[in-house]
Length: 164
Image 1: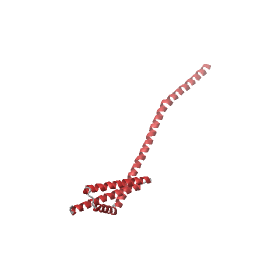
Image 2: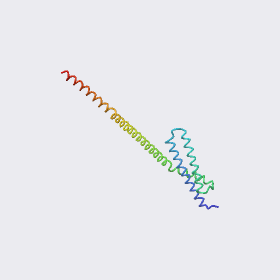
Image 3: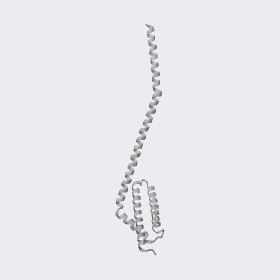
Image 4: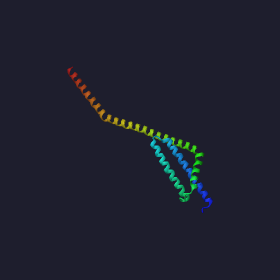
């Protein structure tokens, strides 16, 4: 038979597992509040939450009692969850919501700045290529036109001088 103190230690350790489930529940609520764009995401969040909770319960019971499941494990999980939910859950949920909103704001700002840099880089490249083509094609054509104009003017001057 297991001594009472060992059972009491297992009870409190399982209650900490209930507190961890409460933290996961607040994470679930925070993500659902901030990222629930489509109803299909709600189903996704539900499945992920319950898979994590199930894994956490199994890990907690395995670490504490090596899967020697007793009724008080479920009571301790429930009591741990209630203690967490009634004491610090509102504070943690507010902090998580602010943290998620801050991260979303930072990511949006980074993406906006990347977009602005991309547009400016695009214009720098396009105007450089435009200047290069102007230099290659326009200036020689301009010089050729000037030489033709000067040649025509010089021919007219020669004709005028020859008539005089």
